[in-house]
Length: 262
Image (cartoon, rainbow, N blue to C red; front, side):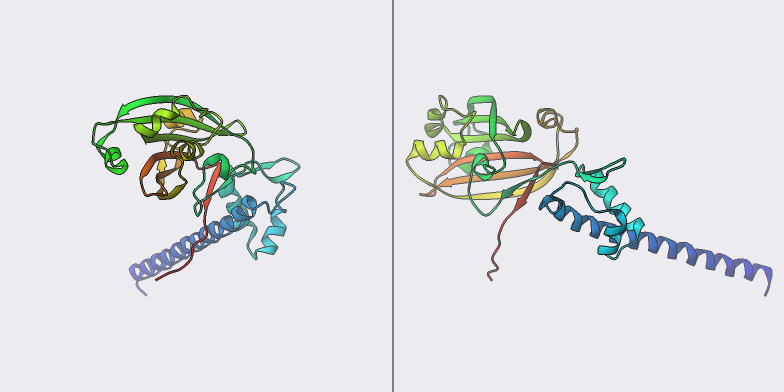
């Protein structure tokens, strides 16, 4: 074989070896991500009641994974702030997320009553002209004053969400003297109107925290937050509460029960 052909043949074998190595790395990364998902569920569901995860060797055996794959999976959970490795102890759970249901219309204090005390810091409250998108959704003329409320909501003293709320002023005026620091707006709306809340339209997406939101939530600037947009209606169908809620993504999980219908 001519030298030039031998060089090309050797180069081709090298390219194959590199491609195979990259494929193995991708495969291990995929397996680590899959294992991280399973372990994350266990962490959030209280599957490690003493707070300590099994040894890497045990995890490798239980999940039929290599030690390297287990280490990568734990690294992913460590980067999320869910676990940490302590010398002489091993991998332990260091953070907790709280469940927020999406299949029932409830205020935050009602939703999390089993997990502690929700308190509200009212940062801003008062009449303000309704921006066109707000007016349209609340069915009031554009520019009409609505009640605007900005609250920092804490669970057991830790910042959990930043809520921006718009309420028609004919209802909202009665909220001006209400105890918003310790009472869900939902309960107050039902008391003021004499009606039950009926239904809500929601949109949930992940967004990066702006400088203001990050500072208020005591989260890193640019950190991912869960943005819940919710338009709540009274039982008679009138829209009465438009909210933009930014949840710290490292402290909340969203769940619901869905039924298939075609």
